[in-house]
Length: 235
Image 1 (cartoon, one colour):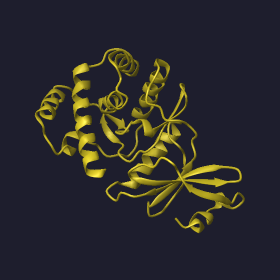
Image 2 (cartoon, one colour; image 1 turned 135 degrees about the vertical axis):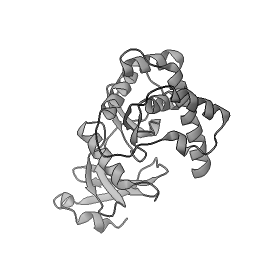
Image 3 (cartoon, one colour; image 1 turned 90 degrees about the horizontal axis):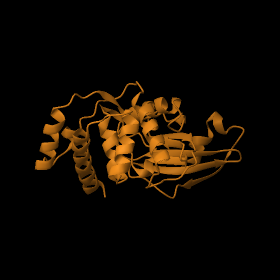
Image 4 (cartoon, helix red, strand yellow; image 1 turned 60 degrees about the vertical axis):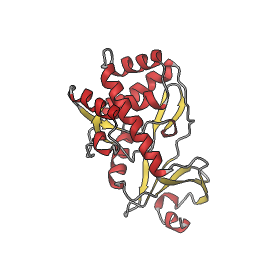
């Protein structure tokens, strides 16, 4: 990206850019750069995939940022080709103690309580290969009422920045939209390979008591199949 494009914004008038360097860990949908000035650090995200509605993504992240669970967006390109956000220090983690699991459950509660203009996502429509396991999962889910909430849909380790066990920021809202809360809960259980004890603790913390294990298992099936097909098409 041309550095001059950023430097025209008032944000850098009295604090000029010192460097723009690629972030070591890149995702599949964006190019990410650390923008450094004398006083601050920022994250520049240049959008890559054209099949994602970036205006919706930006609006959702803004809503989440107001709740303190997403990085604030400081500059957004008028053509939705890039955005600049606050740099959030943190680490990725692949294992949890119960304190961190409780923090994750509470963070998802905060996200799921947000009301904003976002699409409704039907995971069953996105799955190409309707295996017998997927079909059985769909039959299971048909027996439950769906209460749509704002879901992240991609709560994997790289999309979480941890300051400590009590502080979590969610990033990358490309696939966010309204769905049953079990979609995110199941994704966490799969992504972090939670054992039975930690899965039960996580679910009971999120739901503040009773939950539906069969519904959870059905959403796990859908999530695993979606991940399989996504990586087959993008890696």
